[in-house]
Length: 149
Image (cartoon, rainbow, N blue to C red; front, top):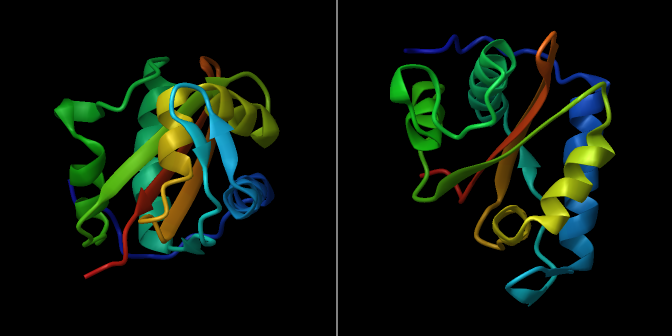
């Protein structure tokens, strides 16, 4: 499942989502279950990460499923590699809601022990986001990685 290397523009909502994520990282947070997470550096936008996020956001919206497992059983690492992401550590954070509200995704992630931990993990330096609206909901996916190799 190779994705096109063609760049696509981030929507205003996708840019807002990453900007807000970087604000959270800059402040540090207290995550449920893991306690205080120190401030982490800003995530650099990556088109290849955004393409990987779009693959999963499209899948979640079309299937109506909130899942890290994609079409044909793909994982975040496989989807990221298919778009050209080559890093030691790769993860994604996901949310599905209604309407277009990036802050709702941020707030949900901040209250989820696992998502809060990973969105504030300092080893992640690059990210791309995708928000896809459909009849089954609005999917929010951010793919994060360590420094590309």
